[in-house]
Length: 258
Ligand code: LHQ
Image (cartoon, rainbow, N blue to C red; front, side):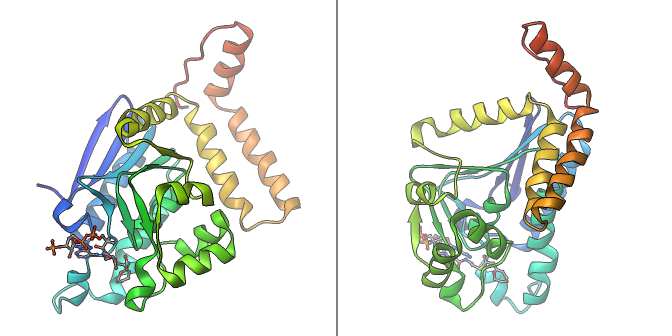
């Protein structure tokens, strides 16, 4: 069985982390396969939304620590530069919405990869843990960038240093999630969110993603110019024309993602 499952249905690609017996912890093979699948999502025009989830009881326990300890493993120096950083970069640069669907425990890099996604939802029974401090490491996979921006410096600093496990409901209250969903409704609700996103004006969503990202490194004056530029790009899409036409004609829009 592959360590990454990949399915495309109704313009939604689902990437499932699939090493359930190791709580979907990442080894090199799984990290490289995930990069490959994200590249596929970028190339395939039919795909208009990506969902990342885990199989079994975990989302992901982060780095496979047995691989770190293995003298024949990739070694610490390559793990971030060749495994996690290219995953985070691919997700941020993908011109399509990426939904992290947290089905269970998310620890270490497994807790931080979701934070870079555009929409994060979690089942009520899921949990999050910045496990790094417990083994003497620093939070990686973009966690030091995203977590303080999502929940504030103090909460981020404390969670990262204390290594507390927090429930999905706590994560929701802190601002890490879009929604916390009852377990029995989780799959259906994730499907509904993904289907909705896949039918929306994809380029408009891509430019929204870009605008939000630029906001973290630009002044208000620069950001007003960025919005101006991105709005021109959005207005040049076929979907903008369709959006306005469908509104004026009082009919549902048929967006094509261009
Ligand atoms: C695991 C793992 C795991 C291997 C559970 N590896 N087997 C970047 C730079 C370079 C290097 C290092 O890493 C990084 C990024 C990172 O992600 S660092 C953080 C790495 N992750 C952790 O430190 C989390 C370790 N795991 C845990 O703390 C617990 O397993 C959690 C809290 C996630 C879940 O606890 P439980 O539900 O009680 O499950 P469990 O501990 O019993 O685990 C079940 C099995 O999965 C068990 O195997 P076994 O053969 O005994 O049944 C664990 O050994 C295995 N597993 N995490 N990361």
